[in-house]
Image (cartoon, rainbow, N blue to C red; front, side):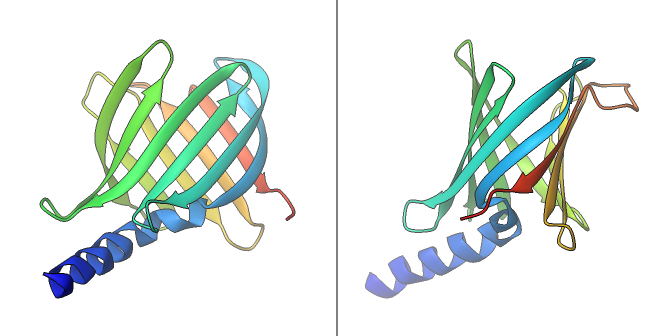
Length: 144
C-alpha cells in the first residue's frame, strides 16, 4: 500500500510539471474587454505539491483555479471558480511555451504562455470565433 501511495505522488507531481512555471507572485497589465487593467496573480503548490492553486485578480474580477494531474485519464486538469458561483473543469494541454485550456466550443479558450528570457507570463482569453483576445495580460514576476 505504501509503495502504491508513493507512486501516486510521483505520478501526480510529474504530470503537474508543465504548470509549475506559474508558481510565484506576478503583477500584470493589459486589456480586458477593451479597457486597460492591472492584474495580480498569486500561485502556489498545495496538497503536498500535487496541485497548484492560482488566485488571479484582473481589475475588480477575481478567479481561483486548481491545477492537478488526473492519473485516471492521463490529463492535466484545471478546476476554474469565478463569481458569481460559477465552476467549470477543463483538460489542459501543454503547448510549446505554456498551457492551453481545452474548452467546449461555446466557452472562451484560455492560453498561458511563458517567456523565460524576460520572465514574462502572458494570459489570453479568446471567445469562440475571435482571433483577437478579449483579455490579454502580461505578467512579470514580483521580487521575493
